Image (cartoon, rainbow, N blue to C red):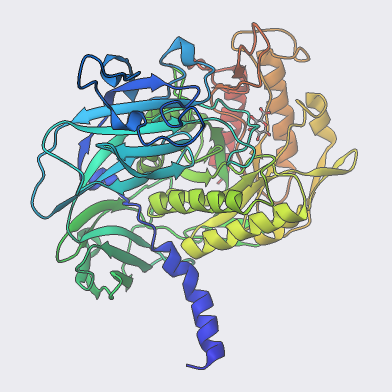
Length: 599
Ligand code: GCB
């Protein structure tokens, strides 16, 4: 190969190879697992004295040793087994009054027995831990994970014993300027082991990850890959989709990677008919099953095409706030409740703000026929020039794409929310875009951007980021932060780009059952008026292809202290935190019904 060709080939291949080298085990729903959910012993450690000694040096004898006095004279100043407990999954803030505003370290400990089996590897898997997790088994460090909303796993095969294993996790949710998200957000910094924890059992060499999706632009050609992990990497792998008559074999290479490619006549996935196929990925040493939908996705000019047909995304934004009880949502029931409310609104699309939600949300959206926008918490004023911050954002993006790339429901990966214009910010976000495309060439990329006024009646979308996106996202609060509701009547929208626009946020606050006239802030009538005028304006935007009002349900935010109204809740929900529909809900619902009939 000529050097130039070699160089170009390496450049093109490099991202794909990197993409397939993540060691995350995906599709945990269909694997052999042992749940570690339930009550865990905890120690609240605001000074991190279980980690650092009194000279602020990491200690060899931290709480991760789970030590017990061996004699009546020995001094040990902690005891997990006499400490309080917290339920996992679950945030700590809503489980203990003293922890409501707490930001810092909490140590978790779970003891369990395990009967090892020959030729079985075992991994401990965390759905998420907010924000930094240091994980130890039987006193040995397994590793550290940063990022509060994506899964991670560590192998524990060699450390496990039959009796009294103790898994200890130090979870620290202190906000940091260089973290993702950074210091300032408009949601609650719920800390802890917020999602399921489990042991995953696999054979010695196993199907670690795979991508089985239609090629971009195609409605019958699947292209993707299967990746094995272990020491018997060269194997035959077979993809079976009995209902579509698919039974194709491929060979993995010395790295355990097989590229796959085949055609089939699929009944395509859509919100009207969310068809999922049973797919089996069978290697010589392992087999996993999944339920996968197939659909195509493209843009043409200002249109978004699903299965070749233009669609309008009738959406709504959702935070991962638990319906009815508050706190972080984590269960399948939470997901079904939130998505059913979105459906009741008339939505065929949800924006999962502002970070990756738990996997149930995406799995249920797949089953219920709801298209999904997923995003990472690159929110507001990120530390754009810090290489570690970029590496962190890239990693969170890799992890959510690794987890959800086989879900037909996911139509958009969004890179960022309301980030202020600057060259370093553009460089940072372009890097994320290139990364996302290298990991998944099939989804549309977007970002929720800001806009500005050209004159008092013209809003302009010309953020330079727009050039690199497939779909423009835009947040605007005409009628709430920007004038009174009627202001929307006179506004026209322009865009520098011939691309589809999703209005990714708009709305206003109302406390449920707070009534007054339509100019009185915080009343349902004011919020209703915001929506009425917004809808009038939105209808006049020729390149609008989707809307996601802010937001389905009220959610906790430390930035919202107004007593008697907010009480630390952002009240822009169309539904209250107790599940009551506000007047604006019905305004939006009526418009979505109208749109649905005309589509
Ligand atoms: C926004 C943010 C969102 C906030 C919302 C608000 O623009 O993207 O995270 O919660 O406004 O309520 O102010």
